[in-house]
Length: 195
Image (tube, rainbow, N blue to C red; front, top):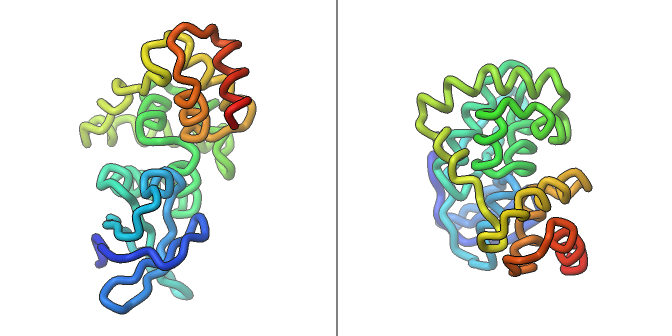
């Protein structure tokens, strides 16, 4: 099993990157959250998960060990394969996913491409106990307060998500506003202007 790779990024074609390690180029599929965290550094370390099927060997990469752990828990859910798990981690960061599971928020989970309401409900039921045992559920308590201490940030974030923006993208947009006194409407307007 290949558990971790450290090397130089040769190509980035989301969701895939080509990582050179010791003269060998590995094609690795990564969630958008990992792409955002990589920045522009050419040298990175990725925690990896190898999926072997009859017709392919696919390597999935994650910037953090927690992402890899969550990915493995997601693919254990019946009906959720690696591609759907990758889509979930691309749509929601760990904190948002933990929060959705802890708060039975099947609506937020169902916004992920490839996830319907029934699958979202199944994910919540199956993941809740597992994630608590992994002590990852505490991430839901670390819900990001964006744009300083503005109490309207979370409402603005929810509004941007309802407009179709991914969580990470919406967080960046609101963080770019950088004002602690704006109303929810003002935050949304300025975030959209910064887009």
